[in-house]
Image (tube, rainbow over all chains, first blue to last red; front, top):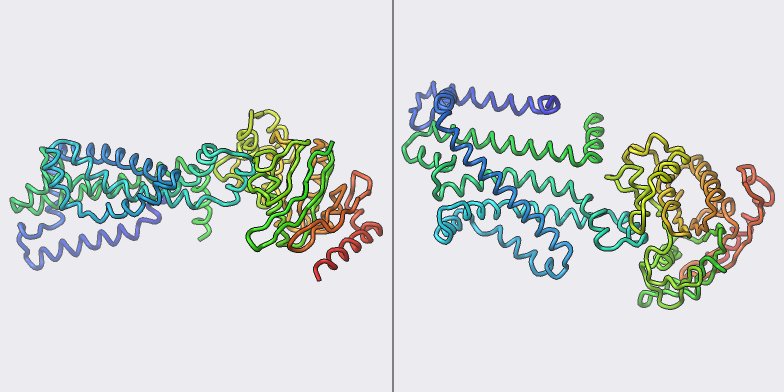
Length: 259
Length: 246
C-alpha cells in the first residue's frame, strides 16, 4: 500500500488538478446543472443518495464476480484445451479471434430476445468479453515455456501430464495473471452493458434511468462508482498475483529498488 | 558387464550427416569424458543417449538392455542449471525422483547440507549464485534413481576459480557415490583432470578419433594441473584435435 502511494501520487495529483479545473469552469462559465454538474455537486448527491445506490452496487458487484469467475474459467479451459490438442489449436484459434469482432452492443439485445431477462444472457455477455484476454494470454504463456527446462523434463522421462503440471502450468502463471487483470476491468464494463438491456437492479439500470430523466449528476455518481469498482477489482488481482507468484515478484521488487 | 554401450550410432538429418558410426562404452563406476569441438554433434549424441531422439542406425545399451528411444533411463545434468524458478531448492533437487519414483526428503536434505547449500533448502533459485545453482542441479541428478549420470558441459558458464572448485567438488561427490559418469566438455584440461578415460570426437560428421586412458592416481589435487605428465598429455590431446580440425 505504501509503495502504491509512493508511485501513485503523481496521477492522483493530476486527477485532483482536473477536478479543480472542472469545478472552476462550471462556476466561471455558469454551466447549467442539468448539462454538467460540478464535482462538488456530484459528491453531495453521491453521499445524500448512497442508500439508493447501495442495492444497485450490490447487484452489479454480484454480476461482475459471477461473470468474471465463469468467464475466466472458460478462458483457462479454452487455453488449456487449445494448448494440449494441436488439432483444436489449428482449427479454433482464428475463430476465437473472430469472436472478438462481434460488436457486443449489437449482440446483447439479441441475447435478451433469445434467453430472456434473467441472469443467463448477462453472464454470457461478460463471459464473451472476459474469456478472450485470458485465453490468448495463457496460450502465449504456454508457448513461452523455457526450452532448457523442457529439455530437462524430457530427458528425465517425464510424461505429458507431468510436463504440463510441473512445468507448463506454473511457468504460464504470470501470463495468466496479466490476462486476469485485463479481464477484471473488462468484466465491469460487460456487467454494466448487460444491465442496460434490462434488469431490475444494477448500476447499468440506474444509469439509463438517470440519463433519460436528465440527471447527469446521478450518471456521474454511477460512473465514479464503476471506476472505483474496476480499480478495486484490479488491485485485488494484483494482490492475488503477489501471493501466488512469490518467485517472480521478489525479482521485480529488486529491480524496482535499483531503478 | 559394461554399464553403457554406444554401438555404431549414426545420425543424419536429410543430407546433413551429424554422427558417423560412434562406438564407445563406460564401465561400472567409471568417469568418462567426451571431448569434441563445438558443433560436433555432442548434443545430438546426448539426445540419442537420453532417448528423446532416435538414431538413424545403431543402438544404445544400458546394462545390456536397449534404451534406444526410451527417455528417463539415464540421469541428466544440463548445461544451464535448469532449476525451476517456482520451486525451492529442496523441491528442485527432488524433481528427478518425483518424475520416476519415490521422494526421499531426508536424503535430499542431507545432500543439500553436504553440498554446502544448507540453510538454502527453502530458498528459490534466483537467490543462489551460479556455482550454487550448478551444485543443486548436480544433486538433483545424483538423487535421481537412474544409475548413469550424463553431464553436459556443466561448468562452461562459470569463472575459472569457481570452475576449479566445482571440479574438485564433483570429484569428491563422485568418489563418495561411485556412479558412472559421462561428462561432455570442450575444455581439454577439465577432461584430463576429471576422467578415467577421455574420448576424442572429430569435427562433423562426428566419429571417435581416439581414446586416452588417464592413469593419474586419485584423489587428484590442483597441483596435478601443473605437473609435467599432465602438460605432456594435454599437448598430445591438443595435437590430436588440431589435426582433425584442419
